[in-house]
Amino acid sequence: MEALKGITILDFTHVQSGPTCTQLLAWFGANVIKIERPGGGDITRSQLRDKDGVDSLYFTMLNHNKKSVTLNVKDDKGKKILDDLILKCDVFVENFAPGTLDRMGYSWEYMHKLNPRIILASVKGFGPGPYEDCKVYENIAQCAGGSASTTGFLDGPPLVTGAQIGDSGTGLHLALGIVTALFHRERSGLGQKVDVAMQDGVVNLCRVKLRDYQRLSSGPLSEYSQFGQGIPFTDTTPRAGNDSGGGQPGWILKCKGWEDDPDSYVYFITQAPVWDKICNVIGKEDWIGDPEYSTPKARLDKLSHIFETIEKWTMTKTKFEVVSICDPLGIPCGPILSMKEIAHDESLRRTGTVVEVDHPERGKYITVGCPIKLSNSEADVQRSPLLGEHNEEILKDFLNYSDEELDEINNTDAMK
Image 1: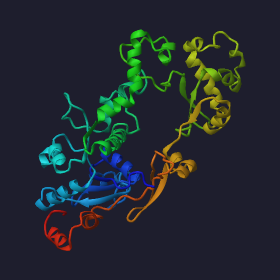
Image 2 (image 1 turned 90 degrees about the vertical axis):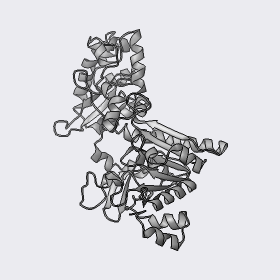
Image 3 (image 1 turned 30 degrees about the horizontal axis):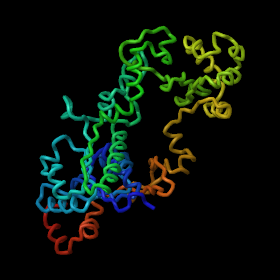
């Protein structure tokens, strides 16, 4: 059974943050009606195209299972259609620049009066404050949310991460807010406003770094590599390279073939309970009883040497061989997987985390599937819609417009 069947989402989002949210809801069965500009649609339809005249992968991978309706809200008939949609929909999702909805005449007050049960869900770059009117993109959110300042190596500049924690991360937060508001509406009968700022979403995902900032008031962070190297700390959380954030020393190590394969690496954690097993595996049995190495505290100032020694062993094995040897012993490690390896990973295909979709114009392509697995509500990933593909279906079947009304609309600029 589709978990969100019967819920209709009016999707006024574009690019990545909002579409991530509405796609997730669509995967769980919500009826998502994506409203797009006549003629062009969501700007990502034409961004980063790999095939001329075909919707880009950027668009298709963010808009599965949705219906597309083109609507010109500057036209009187277009406004009437939008009013009728608001009356029948459960959620209105948008990620316009601040103030855009008000200028369109669709403030929260207007929508709530029109349909007291509707939920207005919004993504903005920043919450109220000095930056609230600033335009925000993925990397700006990462920088303003604290991620970049704590990413990279100590002797280098701040770095952004390839994971889209600003856009897609915020979309995931918004989806939770929407489902929570829907649950609340079941008891109250009223919709409410849901706001998620991209900066706030990134800050939430960086909570352990905020934790470490506060720990500095009690002294140096002993699990950070720089502690063992005798490098002093400042008054804020430093960049920590590939250190493990959970207190267990960890590092990325070269494996066999690293000279030619940029992803021939493994993440290796020297967890205290399996220290003896690590020593046995790498041929350093003498470390087990050596007081200079036998306790986590004693090892802190030798972590660089320890990982260099472990790396001499990992460089004799492929990353998969390292995992196959260490995993049965309970030694925490994991391969660095490339996007190519992930795309063709059979286990990810079986679980639906990676899926193949057939598009009428693009043909078959690989995309992400639903990362959340429900035992009784399996997500079925369907292709993204063509621009305006569902205009007539929504007007006739959802809004119950008559043929005469459809003819009248077709003679205006409401949907073109």
